[in-house]
Length: 77
Image (cartoon, rainbow, N blue to C red; front, side, top):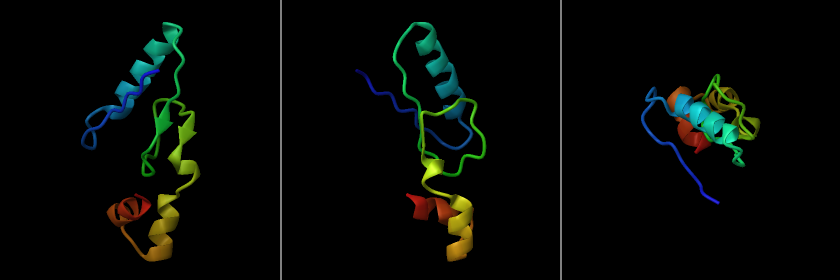
């Protein structure tokens, strides 16, 4: 079993790379589990098997603690 993490700055293409790589792995009959660890992602080009947004709602953090988007993401960490 191997684990691959894609990291990079905002807008660098991590989500698109994740979508393409997981699609390729599935086409080659590999077992794949895709995890989204970005609670601030509004949309994703793939369907994650585990999605942190099911556990953390950045909008609720912003409202509850009177935070901006960046502060809410830091609190979510």
